[in-house]
Length: 347
Ligand code: SF4
Image (cartoon, rainbow, N blue to C red; front, side, top):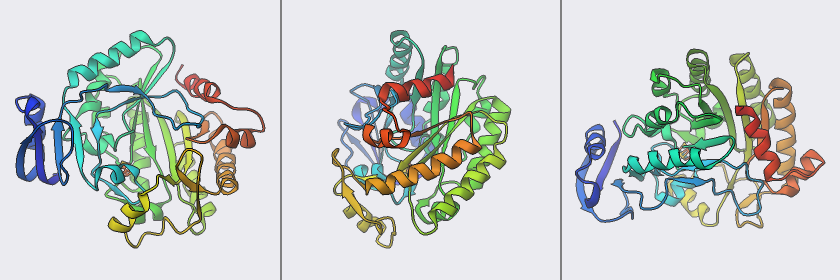
C-alpha cells in the first residue's frame, strides 16, 4: 500500500467518489483540507485540473517533435529513479492527482472528433501511470472510453510490470504498452522501486500475446556509464529473444539531460549517485546534455543494433535538434517526418 505523511484534499472535490476510493487505497498520517492545485509538500494532493487534461506534448523548443498528445492527469511518481526530472519538480515522492475525470473523458472524445488522421495519446509524461493505477485507475478508464476509436493508440508507458488493467480490458487492440528499459545493473542501481528488466519484458510478452496490443520501448535516458555498449547490447539481444514475432511499434532513444538546478536535487536525495560523472554542456534549449558528438555516437550505436534486430520497428530519437537528426540520417529530418514515421505504425 502506498504510504504518505499527508493527504491533502481540495475542498472542491472532497465529496467525489474517486476521492473516497483513493483515500481508502492509501495509508497516511495526517489529513488536511486545502484550496487549489498547489501541492503543500510531503504527501499526496487530490484536486481538480482547472486547465486542460489533453495537450500536445510539450516538445522542447528547437527539438524534432513527434506530434504526440498527452494526458495531464497530475504530477508525481512513487518510484525513485535517480535521474528523474519529475521528482526534481515535485519533491521526491510527492504526488498530485486530478479527480475530475468527466472533463478528461470529454476532452479525449473531443480530440478524436477534432483531429483528422492518426492520434497517439500517452499517459506517461507526468509520472509512471501504472505505478499509480491501483489507487488511480485512469488508464483502465481511458482504455474503455477509446476502445471504438479509429486510427488511434493509447500509449501507456511504465517501468512497472503491472498489466492487470490491460489483461482485464474488454479490448486492448488500441493500446500500445510501452516499457522504459535500461541495463539490469542500471535498473538495480538507479530505478528504485521499479520492476526488473526480466519482469518488464515478461509483462510485455504477456500483454501482446494475450491481448493483441502493440508494444513500444523507450531507452530514455540512456546513461553511458562503464561498458555501456556491452550493457545496452545485452538488453537489445534479450529483447529480441523474448519478444520474437511480436509487434513493436516504436523504440525511442534519448540521452540523459536535465535542467539547471537538477544537480542540487540529486545531491540532496542521491548523494552517492554516479549519473553526473560524465561531462555535461548547456544546450540552446537550456537543458544540460552530453557533448553532441558523444550523443551522436550513442544514437548511432543503439540505432544500428536495434534496426538489425527490429527491422519493422520505427527507431527514433527523442528531444533532439534537427541538426543532430540531419547528421544521423545524412538528410534533413523534421517534426513532420517524425510524426509520419510514427503515425504509420498505428495504421
Ligand atoms: S518511473 Fe519515470 S516518473 Fe517515476 S521516478 Fe522513474 S523516471 Fe521519474
